[in-house]
Length: 148
Image (cartoon, rainbow, N blue to C red; front, side):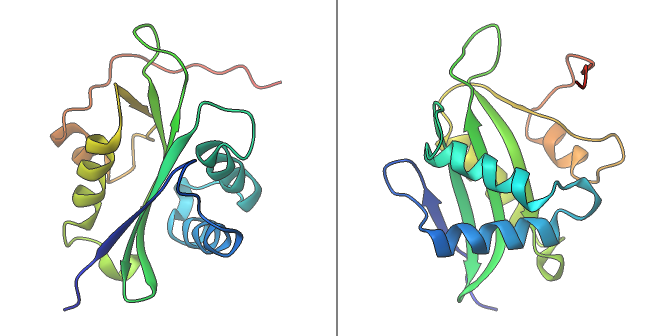
């Protein structure tokens, strides 16, 4: 079995257009029913890279050879105390690499790279919910949204 290599992209070490496209394609394919459309994924990556007005963030990738095996997108909120400093926007592991601890490895690395607290949204039927709880995430609030 080949080793998973981790890559980190930030506003200072940006993902180029080709890598961004690769990440968008990977996330749109492997987020399954918990994902968004390609445009929304692209906006989150642009936010992390500060390619749009934002506090920034980072993208963490896992690769086996040239193939992406996992991806995490963290956006900084620009807030602290009353709202966590970071939000985990996306995490996905390639279908063929699930159940091998890669999701936990990516989450732990994302936690280590983040400065400050991290929020995330997770559907109650998402199997990753148990991983998040094991890593110390708590369900403190019920989220409500007004869609306009």
